[in-house]
Image 1 (cartoon, helix red, strand yellow):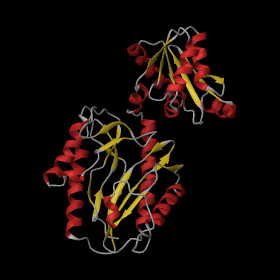
Image 2 (cartoon, rainbow, N blue to C red):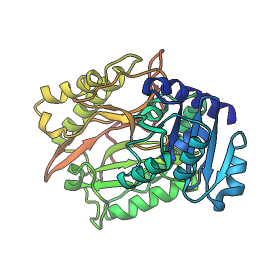
Image 3 (spheres, rainbow, N blue to C red):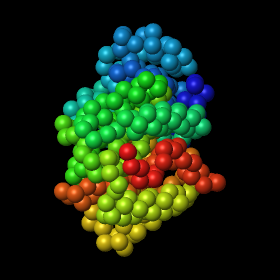
Length: 359
């Protein structure tokens, strides 16, 4: 996708004027990938007003030529240092850099190499560009979600009392790989019974018991893009009244959060649309995290949606909506979807039923 990557680099060039720079040094690997398509483990990118240079090391000579055919390459183990020297040689007077990525030690090294060339923080400019996806990126996200949905549908057919959390997590991950995932988005969460009240429980040896709430939070990685989904079910018995009440409340809040998604919407107000329902029911202290987050090349991206959020949603921004209520020692419910903010209404990418299934 060389044309797509050049469009993205052009977007970054618009930010250079804002920071008073002639060029930008990109060192976060995920941002290098976004701007070039390069997937190796060592690289940096110099974006100038009229071009760009990719630096990587000798392990990636062939790979970088194939993945980034439209940029000049520099082969050097110390990628940022090589590009600072290149920028100075080419007459760049002010170079923006990713201060949130460069260590204090490396900044000292780069400053010495820069000599009279000024180094100025770029800010989170690339992450800002990444929050709005093009249709090719959304297609990859859509397939990542479809892979995860297929794997979960198969897993739910095998869930039964006696199976351990760890066993179910491993099976779900294996099924996602079998359906074409290149990896999992993150370590799968399978939490049963009282463990379901732990938002990020690590699956262990506990065996699922009849009457347990079972919370499953998982995702597939496809083409570099992450899906994210959570479903909560009951195993081996009809749900208790409190379980049904909790699930219905979370589902109502999740529906309200989804419906609040729109271009221009204040992320804090989207969070409030869901949170207010839970607070009104008396469970505000048991909803302990934000409503959701952006998703893409990273599992957690801008924008964040929470009661302290400071962002507005844009068209073609993929986000999660994931309210939860957690009762320590008893159990918890979280329902999460990945959606894309659209002018015509949010596009739902995770389609597994949100009913309180009894397995």
